[in-house]
Image 1 (cartoon, rainbow, N blue to C red):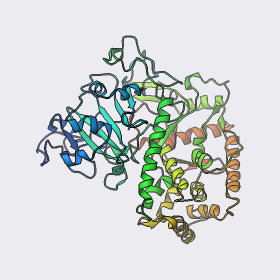
Image 2: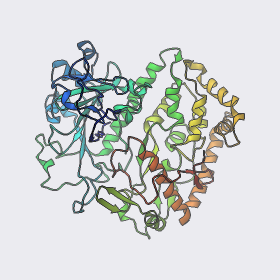
Image 3: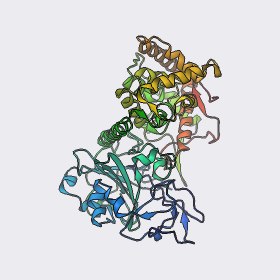
Image 4: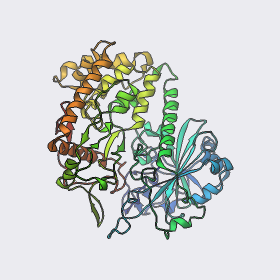
Length: 548
């Protein structure tokens, strides 16, 4: 999380599993049992139990209670947040307190970013949405690269709004995740905790699924972010201008944050794989292969065209390649090639589709007809998943051929593919020698090819794998071209364009079922019922009900 992912949670009367950093379960002011009878919310018992100016620890899913971090455990934390504050008994209350205490180098390298789902909605809208702007602040403190990321709300009382930190521990080679609750701080775990079964998907790791930092809208035009494509405007009287450090007088663009986030993801992947491959055997091969075969998380992408500017007579709307296939992996990493240009939707068909689908943005009493600020939003394969694929190939854990054959299973559905995910049943879940991993997977798939139909995932994989080694890139590239040509032709018809708009909506519904969907204005809604059958793309370019 670098976007400020924590939701404001209502109080309830029973303990439930937490879903954010602030999830502390049964918080306790000391290393004992929690006091009974205190109010609880989605995060556990009320924050009032935490004594000020202490560092607590709770990894959601693993720890039933929060505890004051022991001196021994504290000394193991070597990231900038721990070293500059907690080791010295300092517990900054606000983002300004935190920034004021950083060394000069951190101030010189500081960059400030803004994100708001309501940022492009006219201030005259009545009733209007909640105008919440979140900030991300990055600095290089101990290393040449960014090692401190701070997320907070840019408006409101700094003592009351959320304040979270992801800090890189260059000695341990992982991120540590912290949040301030009232006047105490909580260590919510490190990158490795995101991968463990008991804490995976729990607490802050429901969005930091693979242990790294997160920027959902990672590519241009960086939907919802202040960027070179679209600024987040403020009224001259907005309280944000009275910030005591003038943090928001000169804001950096999301185009810079994209580069930072990608570098941080790559740093964690490199550290993770270095540790995983330091022994002769891979202890948990499935932890790596799930990032090839399943959708552990996604990024949100869109066209580069502002939706409100599109008229029926405009040029066709070019849809990014990530909607049609996992282009970043198949082409960018694994060396396949396509000669067909990016498919596009005729502008008149897109405009008609907005009305046909009743597309709109909605939050509470606020509703605005039309698409998101940038047209045609969709989830695409995550950079962090593709980076694991890339680095596994570079380290020789698997070949580019194996990765391509896996991704070519149901390839017209680059995210949320149950067919591709079925191949996980053939991935070893016990320690496996590094040199035997690929052969083990192929053998298991081959041995089970008779268990399904001609269209089974196993059959699809083996059809690719049996292409001669010196021809697989050419043969698979031809399949991509044939598919893209079919898509391009179908997209030129109103029926085809509307099919693809429905397919994007179906994938967004799947995205909205995940904790990463935090705000109601992140993606547009339609008149399609939330429980409508999901859709899938076929290799002939047709959209059909998901039937796997």
